Length: 157
Image (tube, rainbow, N blue to C red):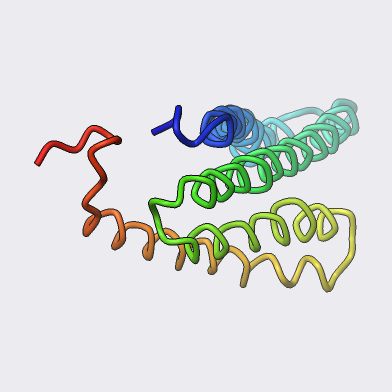
C-alpha cells in the first residue's frame, strides 16, 4: 500500500515515528520535572535551591519545546501526509482524507504552534481539533473493518 500511495504514506509513517521519539524525550523531561526535581529542591540546602530552580526552568522550557516539535511533526506533518496518501489512493473514501487533512493543517501546523506562542484564540481551537482527530480515528476504524481491498492490494478472495 505504501508503494501505491507514493511518498505520502512513507513520509507520514516516518514523521509519525520521529514525532513519537520526540514525544518520548518530552515525557522523560516531564518525569524529571515533576518526579525528580521537586524532592531534590526540598532536600537541598538553601544555597543550592536557586541552581535547582534555574535547572527546573531550563527543563520546563526544553519540555515545552519538545512537546511543540512532537505535535508539529506527528500531527502537522505525519497526519497531513497520511491524508494526502488517502486522497491519492482513491481506494478509501475521500471524505476521510479531507476530514484528516483539514484538522492536521489547521491544528497541527497552525493552531498548536500559535497557541504555544501565546495566541489565545488559536490555543482554544486545539482541543476541538483534537476531538476531530478522535472522530476521524473512529470513522477510519469503521471503514477499515468493513473494507474489502481490491486485488492490487494483496486481497485474495
